[in-house]
Image 1 (cartoon, rainbow, N blue to C red):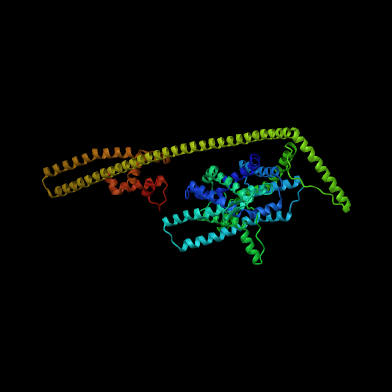
Image 2 (tube, rainbow, N blue to C red; image 1 turned 30 degrees about the horizontal axis):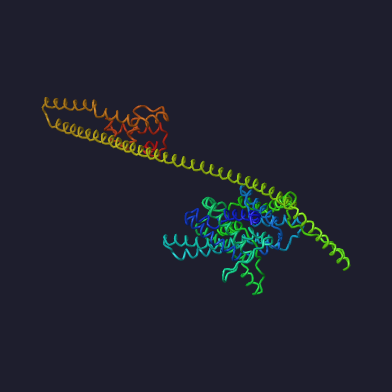
Length: 604
């Protein structure tokens, strides 16, 4: 039993890798977008992948067996190990990889090494499905996407019900996808062992599990363990590498992938087509990753093809070509190693001379062969009785187990090393994200503080501007009142005939004029004006160094949007003088006649 488990370990490892990586094709978008919890996805995926493997896994396995019937346990172990190693190392190198293509390449490598003939008709059928699978997935995805969009446009769901519907759809379609994954891809995991390992049938009442189904159940458990133990990170980090997808598009992609995998593993559907006179469906293991990519491309082409990243598509295509070639080479050299170092039977084909011989010669050869076999059997019995054979066998197994332990230790070391490196990278990413979040928060607070300061400065500036305007208006009103008083005094002076009274009124007018010249309000206003507009006056002086102080002051008053009459009152000059000064200022500033002087200064 221990020996059998050891030889099955490569297939179990391949199943674990399949579950760890390909489960992301089914539930990756749902878990990554938090539409479905990982625990739900893992439980549903594990249950249905085992059911699909046991119930419907035989169809694709028959075609794989026609490509190469691996006859010995050691050969099956080596072929599965070659495929698993190819998938593992290519995944580490971040190259696109297909488990289906890896196992096909490994079987062809076994055929070449053991002189077993490769059925090219079956190989052609398998290679054709590598192309037709993604194409069919693209067609299904495009049709389903159009149907989904039409339904959503006609039926206006409430946002809550829309969300619930998408979640339920992802769970149901994910279960169907897991079933199809197990049904179609279990042949990749355990198909090479079905010829070499024969389990007796197990009866559970009306249900009977054949030996092949038992093997598939073991492989399904390995896939389920891969889903539970390692697929969470892959699901959570799955991205829109080839093209960004909406939730509806992701739902369609998973459904189209499940349909394609189901079709290429359904014996009943194939038989139904044959009964209708149609050609049968090739029951072949299809890569779920390839079908997903074909489905995404189908939706992308339906949208115009602009969102498809063709560079990534080219890299994926190179991986599809490289995977079976590398797996075949690895399988060939591993078989050489297992056969020559461990002296294990890897299923060499017996070469029989095809020359025509007589019946008597054939009978003689058979008798001779029987004699040789009987002689060898007696020798073996003697050796076993003397204990030498047992000693030799034990010695070989000790060496084999020792090398196996070393190999497992090396693999485990690299696995732990890679896991630690990933954890360190993730820790660095987390630290960087925390730093960026902290920096963003700090910058946000600083920006908010600057905004508050800017608002306060703006308020203060508006207040000061308003204060300046009020001060200017007060000066203007004051001069208007004083001017009215002067006019009234002049009228009174004209009506008075007495010289003494006229002289007294002249003295009053003279005092008023002197006070206007020495008006402290005007001086205070001019001081505030220069203080609060110092930056503007400095910029104006740098741009136009030929301006006088009075012209800069006039420009500052114009910036306050004051009229010529109001400026005249503030500067204690006539409006005509203000107009003349405006003309000179316009000329020095080189402003075209059609452009407004005040607007030019306010925008300066």
